[in-house]
Image (cartoon, rainbow, N blue to C red):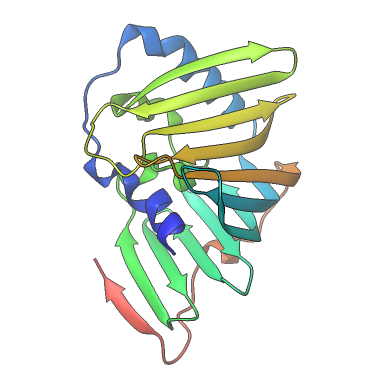
Length: 208
């Protein structure tokens, strides 16, 4: 649950420093690529390594998003977790703990890595310094928080031939979380019910 919570909560401490001119080309390129997918579905595999390269956790799952702000992120058992956003609220569900945490989806939360893919990417330069490199069909973006008091040091987003390929999150102690996307489908019609969470009976509810 720590990795998912990091993905969702990292931006709560981010600053709102105005965008710098040097970031504009990277912001525009990232916006262009993300805007090509108003909806997106994919399978993902997630690998977490410690600072020495030792594997800590490996999970798989499925994700679906619809811009702006709708997300369904489901990590498979045996470490099952769900993140669902309806554009106003975010549900973080841990079935093993029988617990769901409900948070409002505000501007800061939409800048977090997990929700960045479905949010307003043009606003992220308020809190992140963004650089990118492009070679052949690959485009790599590196996002670094402008506020030093954050849960991660950098986030990399990679696109292959215009399609999201992978993400990497690195925290302050060198722990890396690599997420590889496969079977990516862009702009298919999605059921809005995917982005509504029905709380199972007997689940403890924490509202923040």
